[in-house]
Image (spheres, rainbow, N blue to C red):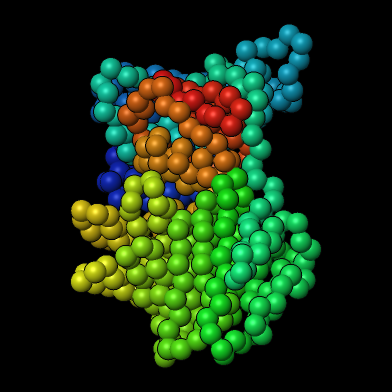
Length: 410
């Protein structure tokens, strides 16, 4: 990313497509060191930019002042060679720095969240609500919930026997028909062998609060299952097709076999593939939507008499009343969960907290309507309080953790 493009971004002189491209680059954790270094090197230049001149918006002015304060604190600390440790009688700027370090947030991330929030995709519906980045530690969490440390998936064999996968060691865990079911050192479940008599089905359930489960099917296909997902499949495929059923979210890497197409079923929606990579989001009881995003290859979506072909980079959303096709989607956002990331790109609070519910196995209660969208990339390996504190930096939403309940308010 060259300097002229970044300066153009901060001057709010980018086209919508340029702004989105630069924001995606800024939000990529791999570029964090580069972003911070560039900002420090050009801070006098950035600080002098008239970022808000074309916006006439007091909210943005307040935000920009907060961002200046945060970056200025970091530079002041470096210039004074101070370590970010809280003393008994700390200066105010040390308190700010310590709070930021405690929740693992680089100044660059705060900056990007703020700029993205107002310039990229504000989606502000309530004209009476103002927002700004804050670092004054208004919210305190009396308890916390750690990120999932283990895979707590449950394997149900034909006949009803349950195997709790976090309680079994690596190696052979079961045999059905002529098929061996094994668990490797990475916690992946693999099926090996042929069964020529009849279809035998297994089900893997990944509960909320569990790490992602990977399953290697007997045909060589690899399936990643998100928290809150149930997946039913044959231990070996017989006949001229391969059919599985999902309720939840899965990322599929299907082994090619032109003579035996692969079908993913969810209620009356069927995804037909020969060999490809795609994501299916189909949680029952939430929005009754099925979203299929294609990364490579081609798939055919079948619902009743409707049939639609997808190309890479497209998402098809189906619900009871309509079918929507979106081109040029950011597939890295769609599959961020597989890489143990939260990726919010103009998402509302309900969409965000729906993900939080599954990862941390919590119940969310809304005291107020939060009519804003959010932009951020965060690790799913952080504690719940860390995720919530990042969102609170916008000062448009606040949280309380009470047991396994999260209360959302203004």
